[in-house]
Length: 300
Image 1 (tube, rainbow, N blue to C red):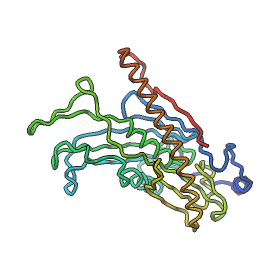
Image 2 (spheres, rainbow, N blue to C red):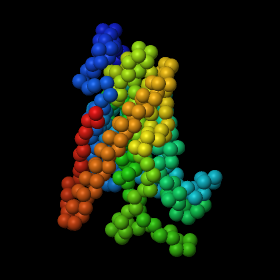
Image 3 (cartoon, rainbow, N blue to C red):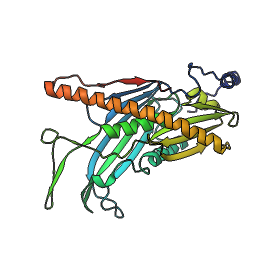
Image 4 (cartoon, one colour):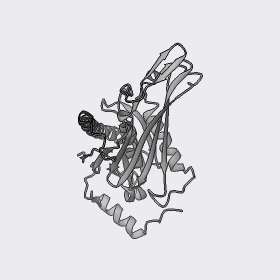
């Protein structure tokens, strides 16, 4: 099923509003929508809401044989799913061009940037390593999937705990959370994608485009960066020619946004840890399941 096309009246209205530096949701040009982060009862489960765009992240792990050319490194696997629940235009069971592009961008942002110490995932060199799988499910689509997905992926990885293991001779022992505390992943930095939509062949620029704005944009620039202002990946699509000054301006804006989002993520993780410690000390085994913690912010 294809998405319902915009009428000429809607298209002209949106472009005219952008020319007048107005947005339908009342944001300024460089404003993000509200970001909300919540966590499930299990480690590695989180929900990220970027306005009305909603992504569920879930991290899991298993012991597997390593790749032949990387005998002492663990394996990272990312998978983003677009379901019809998120938008009727997404067809089930079909690898759309959008889905392939988003998955490749996520891999470049998170795996190729070496944000996870894969050598710390080795249990027995050449025999057993941890495979970390990050599953992302788009639950509602209102634009800017990649930013919401990148935030959900890094939050889920930071929140995840793998089982502790011990090796004695050829025997590998896995411990339950009751026997030994689970072990967090070793994370070097937190890359986050920031999307910039261009209109009228690059004349006008918006940060964090919603679904309507994406449908009238001429091109998209995605910059993945960490809080140290190190660019992890950059991708331009849509066929517009961007000037060097435009890319530099976007990178400066991205640096500010990434710092704000990183601070929000760290605060959400800290609050969730406090909640878990409180439940643990009270021995509250009968607490109701669900998403426990909410943090909300509208980066300027």
